[in-house]
Every structure is written in structure tokens, then in C-alpha cells.
Length: 310
Image (cartoon, rainbow, N blue to C red):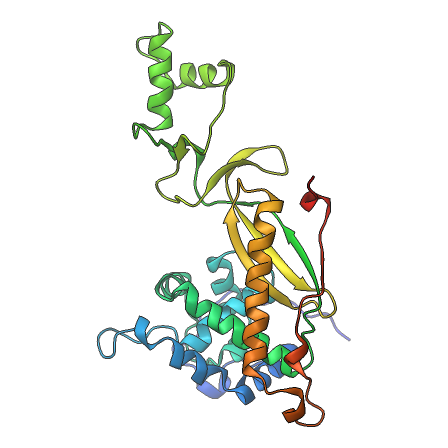
């Protein structure tokens, strides 16, 4: 076999026939997932759930709801934590373009379109789609709901600490340090003076009772696992330990302890399982070979030592 050589970049052809565009045989997982979603009527369900968030006639067509929720699935399966990363991955991969139902000549949705769709569709509709997927998992015997594992983490918020403002007076952190500097005798403090004062002042503390970020009011000041103090959120998940299916995914205030948020997450998990049970027929009416979902009840919960409390 002779050695191939990489061709130098050259100007592309002005016209390219559609049949000459590259195609992908598709990824086996995404191809099979698309078959399951199509058989269950995923796209009609999403379009039926989302018309109130779109204008009937005005404006150019946005991302179809089925495509939007598929892109969120890509972010989960590919472990991508940003809309920009999801948009780039979908645009770059031929198999993911096929999963989204894009033709070779179609443009993949960009990050700004994905962001607008996420802001337009409310949390209740996201929860409805999540519950619909749980029902499909139950139909394929991929949801047991008896033993749940619950764990949480801290996620750094997309908001900077220097932009926090004081709740009582509305002053910024820089203005707060400037007042302290003037009180200590520095009439015209520089940025270096303020930084030095901030490092050396006694009792240095930023409480969530006194400070908030106007750009992300839900973000709370907390200490991350690497020791840094930053604005953060607290995602917490409940997972079916028998199948690995996520039963509940909630976001809590980062300054809340694990023992405080545990019951909220379990309540959300139980509500999701109840929706699955109510959508299914009793065991006597269940078709032969179809899983009986009426037994989806939480029996035990597994947590780490962070949830132990006296």
C-alpha cells in the first residue's frame, strides 16, 4: 500500500451537486434511537406541546421542537455542557446531522438559535418531554423505580464575583471596597490598593444574605470543591440504580445542604414515576410481553455520606 499525501488547501468548486455531498451511514445508536422516537411519535408530541411559544405566521421558521430536544439529547450523550459546543458538534458530525433529520444542503442550528429556543420554551414543557421519555423507557423495561441513587454537585455559574451588588444599598463590590479604603485613610485608592485591602481585611466574608448577582439572581456564593469561592448552582440527580435511567434532575441553590435538597429531588422523582404509572394500564390489561409499570414505587434510596445528618 502506497503512502497517501495530504492535498494542499485549494479553492472549492463554485457549484457542487447534491449527490456529490458527503453522506454518513449513521451511528448505530442514534439510528436506533431515531427509530424508537419515530415509532412512539416523538416529533408530533413535541410540536403539539410547543405551539404557544411560537408565532403562527410572523418571522422565519425557528428550530423545530423535535430537533431542539434532540440537540439536548446530544449534549447529554456526548457530555457537552454548553449550547455553543452542542451546536458545533451537531454541525461537524454527519451522523448527528442525520439524527437531527437534516438534509446535506441544510444548515445545522447555530448556538444563538438553540439559546433562543431554550429561553422561549418554559420549564413545564421541558418536564413534559422528560416524562414522555421516561414512559418510553418504562415500555422498554428500562425503568424499575425501586432503588434510586441521589447525588449532587456544585456547578460554577456563568456570572463573575466582581459583578455582585449589595442587597441593602445596591452598591457594587468595587464601591464597597472603595468606601473601606477611604475610611482607612486612602482618599484616591487605585485598583492595586483595593486588591491589597481586599486580601488583608479581617473577617472577609461575602454572605448570600448581603450580596447577589443582578445578572444571575439564582446563583449563590459558595465554596467549590477545588477551594475557590465563586457563584454557583447545585444540580442534583436521582438515578435508577438498576438501569441507570435518570428519574429526576433538579437545580437547587448552591448554599443549600444535601439534607435540605434531598427531599425536593425525591419528591420530583416520585411525581415523575407517578406520571408513568398513571399513563399505563393495570397489570391485568397489560399486553403480553409488555412491562408492568404499575409497580414503579421507590423502595430505597442510596446516598453518600454528605447526606448523613444527626
